Amino acid sequence: MRSTLAGIPTALWALAILPAAVSAATWSMTDYYSPQSFLTDEWNYWDKADPNGGLVTYQNMEDAVAMNLSYINDNNEFVMRVDTTATQLEGRPSVRIFSNKNFTDGLYILNATHTPTGCSVWPAWWTVTSDIDNWPNGGEIDIMENVNDQYTANLGVVHTNATCNVASADTTMTGTLQYTNCTADTGCRVLMNGTNAVGETATGFNKAGGGIYAMERTLGDTGKGIRMWYFSNDDVPEGLSDNATSVDTDAWPTPAADFPVTDCRSQFGAHQIVFTTTLCGTWANSVYGDTSCAATYGSCSSQVAYNGSSYEEAYWAVNHIKVFASGGGTEAASPAENAASSSSDGSATSSTSTASSTSSTSGASRSAALSSVVLAFSMVGGLAAWSFAA
Ligand SMILES: *[C@@H]1O[C@H](CO)[C@@H](O)[C@H](O)[C@H]1NC(C)=O
Ligand SMILES: *[C@@H]1O[C@H](CO)[C@@H](O)[C@H](O)[C@H]1NC(C)=O
Ligand SMILES: *[C@@H]1O[C@H](CO)[C@@H](O)[C@H](O)[C@H]1NC(C)=O
Ligand SMILES: *[C@@H]1O[C@H](CO)[C@@H](O)[C@H](O)[C@H]1NC(C)=O
Ligand SMILES: *[C@@H]1O[C@H](CO)[C@@H](O)[C@H](O)[C@H]1NC(C)=O
Ligand SMILES: *[C@@H]1O[C@H](CO)[C@@H](O)[C@H](O)[C@H]1NC(C)=O
Ligand SMILES: *[C@@H]1O[C@H](CO)[C@@H](O)[C@H](O)[C@H]1NC(C)=O
Ligand SMILES: *[C@@H]1O[C@H](CO)[C@@H](O)[C@H](O)[C@H]1NC(C)=O
Image (cartoon, rainbow, N blue to C red; front, side, top):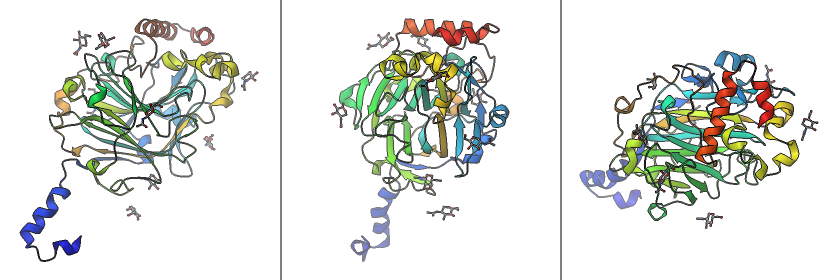
């Protein structure tokens, strides 16, 4: 390398070097979330009814810490776990957190060593409109998702309110496009071939000691839409080392998931970064019988009610999240332009039928499920009875 530059005048040398150094896809880190940051006001703990209809009681930060559901472990990882008390007839305590900060275009990196696994468990790492009460307005991007450990590769999913379709011919990815309509209930979905899935599958993320998931959102005129990658700890691309503060995604391999959705950029507002671990709910419950889960526990709700020890592995262990919201060839819409008018921690009505992550149920059955949830959560003492109903 160096020898080919020898003898070239400095000005030309600079010209030769610069294009690579300022690649359009070079991002600069703007936010670094350490394990400790998850126990500060940089993150909000959702403590209302689960919008996904799960049999969980989400805890605020103080209670989550007091109940040992959120803590820093001996490896300096931030842990979010589900309550393992043997019997819980009124929903199992769990944790759902979302970033205080709102983001638009950017590169989002999760370095984790463990993801929640098990029957009835529906874990996700995702970004969603900060206007959560009006979901799906503003959109949703699921980066890591599974239910009942039943998908052997990770699912990447995009949800929008109005028309947004992904044409297979327009994609460049190693994954498989399973659904093309981002507006439909299923969202547009990619099964990320070869990725270590969230969940205890044959190629499990946890068995590999964790790894890195990345999502790039560039919705401007020169953007590439939404792309996702998985990297094992042994195969981290250059520039993504622990201390790197700039990354060039043009130098990365073909993404595992590609959603070239720049045409529907108006469907995506400012997003918050979210972790959820719900149980049963609209999706995991409806497909519970597809695997051996039903034969093992009888029903999703009975597992939640009586089999606390089955949730020992239902936890996230996070090393860090990085956000690179500067550079990257993006023409990021300003958060102000997109910012939702309503506060995400505003009126806590149980009619918040929002943020159902990918659902394989039909619109009608999802609405029905949500109505029954709304009913259950608004009935004093009604939860115990409901726990057995599903
Ligand atoms: C919190 O839970 C973890 C996992 O079960 C356990 O290792 C740890 O000892 C618990 N800490 C406290 C303070 O109970
Ligand atoms: C959401 O989509 C519906 C049509 O499905 C449309 O009537 C409504 O205006 C959309 N909302 C926004 C904010 O675009
Ligand atoms: C991904 O998996 C699907 C289903 O197994 C397969 O049809 C497809 O060829 C795979 N694609 C790649 C790029 O490996
Ligand atoms: C996408 O799904 C929505 C909602 O179900 C539906 O109204 C629309 O017709 C679908 N679009 C296509 C192209 O199938
Ligand atoms: C992931 O986090 C671990 C623990 O902090 C660290 O050793 C490792 O280098 C990180 N990997 C990357 C790619 O950042
Ligand atoms: C990363 O930064 C930490 C803290 O500044 C330092 O101790 C460590 O040696 C650095 N690691 C690398 C690979 O440069
Ligand atoms: C679930 O809990 C019930 C009640 O304690 C117990 O009888 C059953 O064996 C448990 N099932 C499994 C698979 O552990
Ligand atoms: C993010 O957006 C939500 C909803 O508009 C708002 O309530 C919140 O204050 C915003 N966060 C920051 C840090 O501005």
